[in-house]
Image 1 (tube, rainbow, N blue to C red):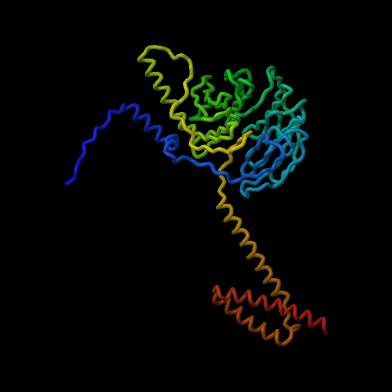
Image 2: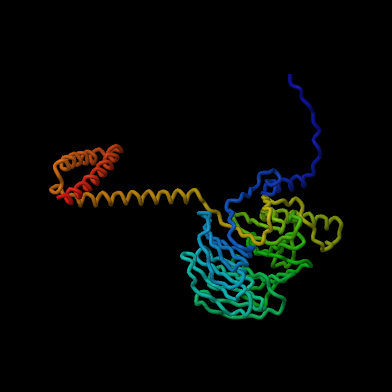
Length: 432
């Protein structure tokens, strides 16, 4: 006999159930179930004398620059420092890569340098700014770059011909950062409290996104073919803007005690990841694809409330609920810059290197055996050597017929004996 207990099933709103189901399907739900990504430090190296101002990553190449006027180079495959670049005479302000073949560096000396990552040779230098360069952005095509400076000018550089294309005057406060979107049709300039996005095809078209507090960093991103803007702010919040609609569609708290210092965005396996770093040393990684789903659900709920109450929205943006990072890590130090690195398969590359080394060793052994067979003369050797040589010939014939593993070992032993006999011959000749 089995005892059955009738449990009362609570009444659940079907809309809330569907909403929770959608949240659970995204990585935001995984974060609440402790199944999210984990951040583990794999490369920690104290390289600069003073604090690091900027970093850049292109493929397996990484570079860092700071107030010590030095650019340090690293190999992410080998996880070690590989060199140093000493050219700029001021603080390194920006390091940006084009794919993994070239790098642009800028400094407070007003100079921009183009480097080739193959041998880290300086191909050209661009001089034109009258004061320090604050940021450089390379077009996705790699043919041109934009730079901004404290001299309140924007300069366009032709990277193919190695010369300046044009210069524009910025009639505002100092521009802080500049970036291109993914397709290269838009570029944005960040000021103290606003970001202005310009259309590269139509200079008269621009979009302004301002905030009462200070904006510390921004990035472009794409979702379902549309361009968006994400910012990290002084009030510890992340804000997401629709560029064409020119409005903020969502905001959420970073969960830190201090301001958001820097951010970065990366697309990986159809998922858009956002990394936010605060000055208290906390790194948060967010899944923006899941956050876009939450924004759509929040917009639907707002429309339903509007229809029921018959009132218009107050215009005050509310923080998104149920937003949690998929990963969090406490560094225990002050973070000044951050950058995503592409996925690197360390194990496969190590195996490939081992195979190459084994192939090279086998080729060297075969060449040594061929040279030894050419240099041998039976007439110059004594009778004892000739008898050994005859036995070696017989064993070599058997080896060619059988092709067994044991025969390969005998070959190596015979080759060693031949070398010893040749050394003995040389000594006998000198004695005679």
